[in-house]
Amino acid sequence: METTVKMLEDLTQAIGVPGNEKEARDVMKKYIEPYADDVYYDHLGSLIAERKGKEAGPKVMIAGHLDEVGFMVTQITEDGYLRFETLGGWWSQVMLAQRVTIATKNGNISGVIGSKPPHVLAPEERKKTVEIKDMFIDIGARDKAHVEEIGVRLGDSVVPVCPLTKLADPKLLMAKAWDNRIGCAITIEVMKRLAKEDHPNTLYGVGNVQEEVGLRGSRTSTQMVQPDIMFALDTGVAGDTPGISDKDATAKIGKGPQLFLFDRSMIPHKGLRDFVIEIAKENDIPFQYEVMPAGGTDAGAAHTVGKGVPSLALAIPTRYIHTSSSIIHYDDFEHTVNLVISIIKKLDSQALKTILENS
Image (cartoon, rainbow, N blue to C red; front, side, top):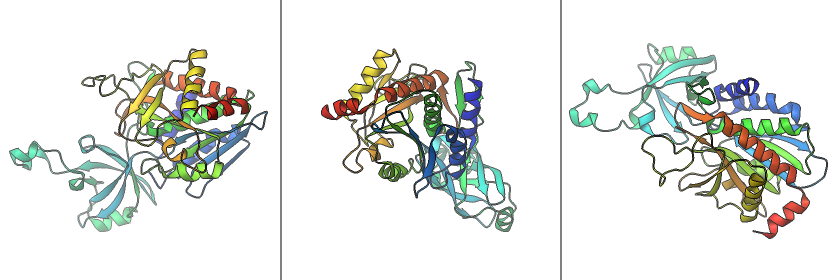
């Protein structure tokens, strides 16, 4: 577990906002390249690691996305504060007073998201949530010239700060960017374990870019690979915290991956869905069903490429996604890796034919 946790730490601590995923991509490349026959990129920057099996069977693509929700510097005020734009979905109530890292041309610097303090607000204003447009980042600069001297430029990436931390139960891991470095980690681990085993297909382990701003990298990487089957490995909402009812979310961390039956980007291919459920049951791998009425995954873009690609999303239940500090359970990582490996080992030409006949 400790070796894997080190990989998880390296992945989550890398900076990788939509449109600037290079640091996270370099980490993924370091870990996946030893288990691939070739590693290459599409023109948006998605990473594609290819591994040939013992047979020239189906082309199977498993993909996490490299980008995390973050921010971009869009303005430097005369008195030295930074205005910013959100990259991906943020809820304003989780942002104030959060420490952030700004990636500048001269290296990373620290800051904090600020706003007017409640002490100077009228009583009615205190009851309202602060709008994102009224927030700023304080890096402790004297003025605009000092900011520019430090090396901050418009367009610089900003991410929250949260070191990977083991909680009271050491299998509960808190970090930034689980959405979706955990999908990248699953992809790496599947390639690593399959390096010692045969599989009847060609496997493509992918780290997509720009998922959080419209599933963009998935379109180009899928177009480049032209897979027969695609799995998006992502995060889902955990429903095991106070105040959440079964009507909101049912998944619990530690109880296995979520198999998406529906989200706003895709209805999964029925034949593929049934194939995966059968594999999970045959191998006694726990899983949970998920219906997500808002949001989507990279499968939502991939499944409409070319003639259509049978696709399915598998997700890790995650507490507090799209915040600075999210929590996953290590067992869910292991269960998902085992499920994906079991699927790939069964996905030969005959299995693909059966899946397509059951659309």
